[in-house]
Image (tube, rainbow, N blue to C red):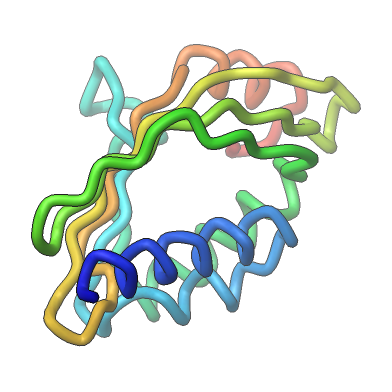
Length: 140
């Protein structure tokens, strides 16, 4: 039963992101939850975690305004107790440059007993994000 509840919560957060609904994404996080884009260089602009509710809402607003998700295709979901690994193909549009991008992303998600996200680490091509930020003169 717990596995099905976690799977439903995972679907909820990705449905909100696919709808470019920053508030819906934030609602899935615990009060003290964190989000981090993993980077090869912890000094990069995408490497710092944001604290949910205060810091996560503005970050996700910038992300949803800058990167419009157009299609998400799940590849694999592995759930072990309160932890999940989610791998997917993503088609997204970088709004400032009008460029369509296809990539793969892997998210590592930890939940609390209330099935709120306490930590989400996203593994993606941060070098591509950096290039797009430079091309558009925008932070993300």
